[in-house]
Image 1: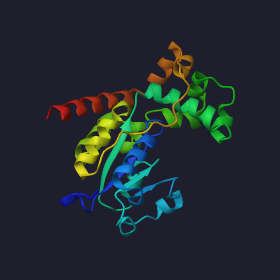
Image 2: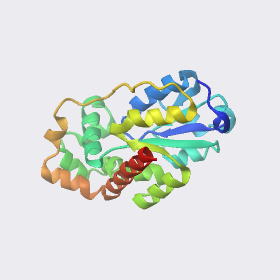
Image 3: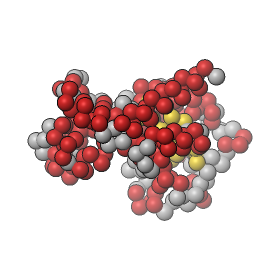
Length: 231
């Protein structure tokens, strides 16, 4: 359970991009690092507490999770190593739409969506568009720019993989820190076949159009993981 040598003062900052299996990642890494050494926004850390975190308050923390952009973690000033999972942006948009409608029906966004289809929301509802349009790039580097996101990942040596490779990513992280690995549990899975019902050709094309950078990012992450596996 102890971290090794030079990594003793390093905190793993997990940028939880919505609908990319982040909850499963949190559960797996809580078990690996020790729940008492983990902070997660919305679980045992409020947004207000996150906003005033200092390196001193993280002295006993190994993993910090949150639906927060990387630059928000950086303002804390601690020594972070970043991690994230990414997903096909078209699948992510459908998953997010379904999640809001089914799991968060009383939320402000669900009420704004109302009886809209996914296509209608993707075309005209700006609060929803903000949550699905190249969000993965924006959460990593602050811009809807896959090249800059890739530069950030390379420069800071992120732990990052696509959602379907979560267990492989968790194993990589555990190997790096000397933690015990166990398979990640599964959470918030939509009903079988929901994506097929939501994603007709026109909707698929519309979501792809506003996620060109996230599609490039996904290709980069998959390629990078393959290269890592061959080292």
